[in-house]
Image (tube, rainbow, N blue to C red; front, side, top):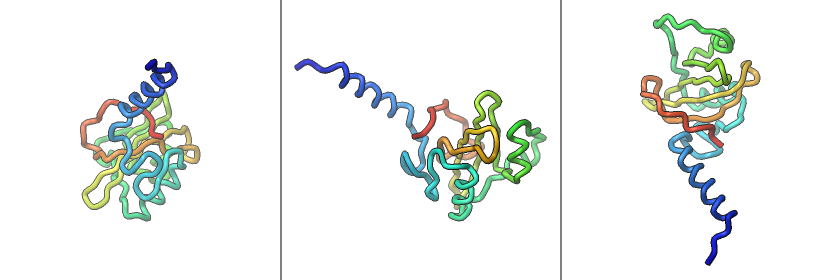
Length: 137
């Protein structure tokens, strides 16, 4: 039996998706803790997390880290759970905790009101980072 090229391509794409999805979602592909979702505005996702008992993990309280760019805007709005934002792709990382569990939330956007959730993971801020496994969704 001859395998169609389209079937092979579909199997290849599925395999790639599984390879890059490893551990990037805490609950499932569409909704995470407290019902947060990929492409949900950060402000809404943060509110839902806090309502469900997740507490922002204060970052950079005594290490002398200087915020710049969008980091300054987030800090000015008391998003003190911010770890860092990249300069080249407008991605930010924030951390939360609940009953000993940790949650990393990644966002994208250049201004607070435009920032959306791109992924989440069961990860603590002091955990060694894994190679970027791509966006969720």
